[in-house]
Image (cartoon, rainbow, N blue to C red; front, top):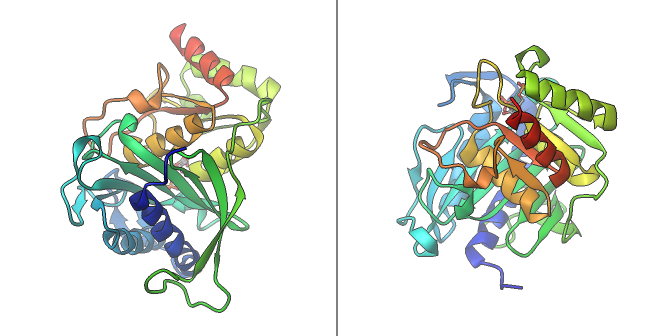
Length: 307
Ligand code: AFP
């Protein structure tokens, strides 16, 4: 197994270090900021806070050249040209607070991270690592960094006040599961969007899956994907009749999640092939996302192919 990449390690250290501070800030940031993000979505104060904290933390990581965020129109140069094929610095793409509309309803949210060794927009094949923080009853971080997929519990160190200087950073990361693999037997499904907006072929596929699995849909991709990671099954934010590219963004939502799921033996698709092969035009491109057990994703692609 390859030695861990020190820059990748440092990126996940920085993301973990921000997690308790972001979590503690959420109660006071459930309001709208009055702004819209580049995808035209309402931005909550929590989104802005998480984005700024993560930019500050990741800018300080040696080897990170650019910062790309759901909340920012362009990549931010944070110190170093991002090189192709791993020379030079990495580009880090972030959804700072995925599922922020769950803040008002006090449900799961998270932060999604993709580390690319190419300037964005890039394909998922340029990812060297990816993962996500999940703000659930506890704060966890799932990491796919080329040495398997692991789940960590992220906690403040006893008595620490949060983001510290240097190595302590005020958090502890405890690996609670390593070498994660999707359960062979799928149990849950979660499909986004409104049923009337689903194309007929997807609706027919959904009807079959509903007869086989249990519905688990919470409105935050990271929470819903973590159900699939834990229990096996399928998550989709499908192409919609009036939005054929679906809702989720390729660079900082679909690609990182596809990298995690494929790294643990699952499959991803945009409806016709792996998400990781989708060639983007811009850093905010949307893409339909289907991820989970390979047999369920294969059936999805066959169903859409009959359309
Ligand atoms: P917000 O960050 O605006 O809450 O959107 C979350 C999200 O991008 C993704 O996390 C969910 O899977 C999806 O949107 C939920 O969309 P619906 O609200 O249409 O179900």
